[in-house]
Length: 595
Image (cartoon, rainbow, N blue to C red):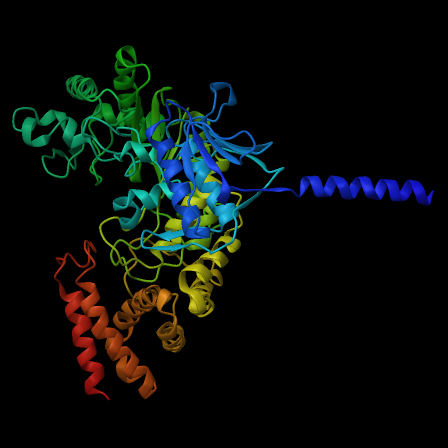
């Protein structure tokens, strides 16, 4: 019995040794196919560049390699692998690591998976990456993975990734806002064509400036009259249908390579209440009734000439509720917008009435739509830098969208300029979770706070969690994308403790220069909210002299920094050079006078 046991142990040990063998890709040759695409060639350059950063070794790209040499093969997956444009597979055979994917983006994404998984590389922003130094780049000999994204569009639309395509593609972002890129990033010519874009196209397709004077009947009958300004279209007017159909077809003919063309309401209410439109909306139980019937009619004509083209339309505000009878045509893609929701609590579990309604609408749209797109929101549109603790709800909602058959997702962040609250963290999480919604959000955040903020990460995470806790403990409180700066759920005591954390974090940053700028930017986000909240409450708020000094310093820096933040919109109808920034400067002088 002992002999048999020892033999068995020896076999198991031998098997373990064989399976523990690793290939060192820092000593490999990269093999490309003769007709490798631009993105596959770029994938080889990216891998070679990061191997040098990680190990200090240079590796070459060649059409062939010595038989026994370790190889990295970047190749195109056959159609029967069913990986699409986005998916990839990585496997190990003999002395080769094989990355298979499409000629567009799949192979490139596979290379980034290798760099992240086995190199520990992280891309937190366009200007800040983590590249550990190692002696070797080891891949287990039994490693194998096949990945396809949960969403075919993953578009965290923030300023940084939107203007830095190298960063966006490294986080596997793709969709509206990320489509007009260099072919080396695997881009297509355009997601949305014809100059229409993703939203609010009625005026482009049938302009009131062009048609209203002679044909007021083309436009909204609202409040007993036809509207020329802030108007929608009369969707039951056959001439409007003819004009829009002709316009759309003309645009597709000029730009036939795009797959999506938008036909959607303008960005205000004032839907048509004429007798014919009202009759259909009553039958359908929603104003989306006239919209979907109209878009279906256009899409039918489009399909006759362009069978592979999709027509996208918004399910937004007054059209968010799906119609009772009419279903979107197979080539129509409703884009469901979460505009009215509470973003502190998950849509699926929230108590807020708009979340409950949205959840119901999503379930119904998913039943009647062949393809469904989500337009989600991630920031405060009155004040981009303001505290907006939506991250946990964001993570839960992405999974909820996936489970309700949504295949495309667009995250509306602060796309006009830098400076939004935790914009880097949100872009990072949105990219990761829209690829795989089952990833652990806490593990992703642990990685981010440690990597992006360094030794100050623990303090900043503590501040992040405390801001969120005031909403978590109040399930009926609402975090709106248009919230004013009062932020009722956050007490003054939070800001006092936050100032203390800022002071400690900034001292840490003085000795941690690599992360100092990131820490400073976080401090400015919290300070921005704090100053507006407390500027008029100085006699009521007990602060130490040290707190006051810190606030003066941050106020001055925030004022200078604010001049570099472009496009912070819709603040009491003020312009960019407005009283917000003057108030910050004034606040600094107020603090100084009270010292």
